[in-house]
Image 1 (spheres, rainbow, N blue to C red):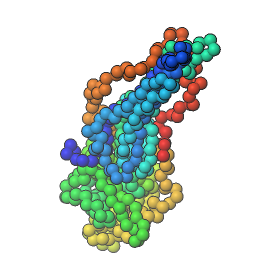
Image 2: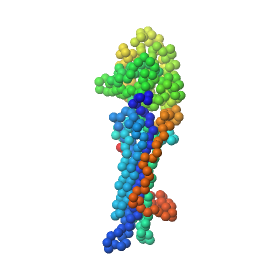
Image 3: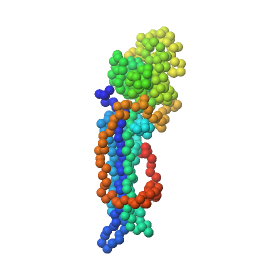
Image 4: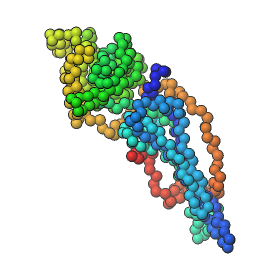
Amino acid sequence: MAESNFIDYVKILCRSGKGGAGSAHLHRAKYMPKGGPDGGDGGRGGHIFLKGNSNLWTLIHLKYTRHIYATDGAPGYENTSTGKDGEDRTIEVPCGTAVYDAETGEFLCDVTRHGQVVRLLRGGRGGLGNWHFKTATRQTPRFAQPGEMGVEKAIILELKLLADVGLVGFPNAGKSTLLSVVSAAKPKIANYAFTTLEPNLGIVNYRGQQSFVMADIPGIIEGASEGKGLGLMFLRHIERNAVLLFMIPADSDDIAKEYAILCNELATFNPELVNKPRVLAITKCDMLDEELMEQIRPELPQDVPSVFISSVAQMGLTELKDLLWRTINDEHNRIPEDLVHSDLDERHRVREEDEFLFGAEEEPDVEPENAGGKMSVEEELNWDDEYWKDHYENPDDDFQVVN
């Protein structure tokens, strides 16, 4: 796995920019000995944005870029000149990326559409210049407002592939073979367990004009929800699927038992997966005749539609596509756009990423030039409640969908 380019879980450190300090400048000009305060406002600190990009399919570009810092806003200047805003930073991620707080595991936001922009961290607001604080009784204020601090947060980005159909089954159940036959995908196929080490996507053409996306994940074994095998690492990728296609070989000792084991592993990993629509495919049926199929049919689970297929012999694939297409397009099976993600817990975390320690601060905290005077203790009291409210609109919350 260390040599794989497929990265679906990464921990990074983000920091929005600090707002520039307001200026406490007093106007100086010929024939104007008492020009009064004219210090400008500080610039806004840079935001941190997330942007969906359908051309990306992995988070490997963030594996080696652990620090995402926006720049600070510039301080205000004389003649009520506002300082320059800090530069924003945009993190491009694949569609289907969910964001979590690295410390608490709390779900923050997700990006599901190409071009969708979400503001992850808000930059600090610039401080007000001293000309805001002049009054009839205080005509020469020699203080200005400092800029608001930026936000620093360690986050976890978790990719959950967007697909219509997710393939679920034990190792060597024929999942990769089916994907290679019904789509142009070329997954590795071999006669040993866990040949598939990373998810694969394929576009399945349906009757010439339509198509749907199929996702193949590594095989699931009993105990995968407890960390056994590779299934636990990739079960997250079927959380966004509209339909789950269970695949069990025809030569299995007990098809109903294997189906129950798979259902139990999914329910243990995420109870919401129980409510997803399912289709059962009995694979490798080229070694069965009609009489054996009729003997097996009563033993199949009765609460899920089933079909007998053989990827090698191209048997039953049209019937399978028809069944999947009807299930996908059922209005009751639509995945809501505001899909609620559960918070990360110990079972869903990747240990090597959680234990990653960020280095020392790359940028020293230096007070900018022309930062302006500071307030007295009395004036600093109720600063946020009074002046922020009077001179700024209510700031938008973080995680705002911009586009």
